[in-house]
Image 1: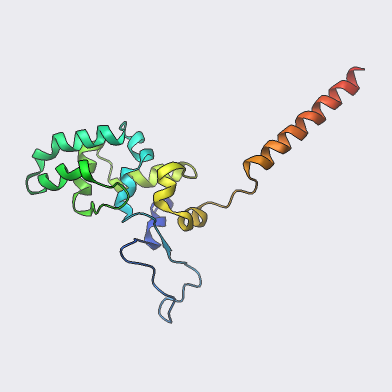
Image 2: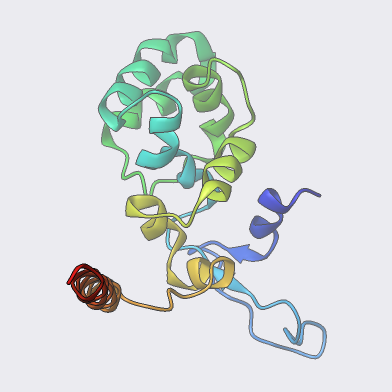
Length: 169
């Protein structure tokens, strides 16, 4: 199984809750972590994934609504996208149809999400949907905050200016 998809194997959804460690599942080597959205399918509706597909949330909803009539019994569920809370709505029954509508390359939704997550440490709503426990499990904590980096850059700039002045005269 490829590394970009492996992360989902041990993420639990909000609706299921986290399992407690037990004799059968001691959680010694693989920790259970929880997404901060309804289920993994909701990650497909984040700005990062939609941008990768060339959409905004508004344009994606318009595309889904416009194409909904092509999906028979799932038409009504797809048309309700105008009312969805991207983070909390249950879209499991229509995620494949959403991917067909939005992705001209027809990449499976889980691979598309995995590719976006795998590029860099997520920010924005993708990071929010994943949640802190997933983010810290997959990416090391930042060693320095922005103010420390800025202070170090300022100190370095002063040292460089001092060296330049001493060499020039």
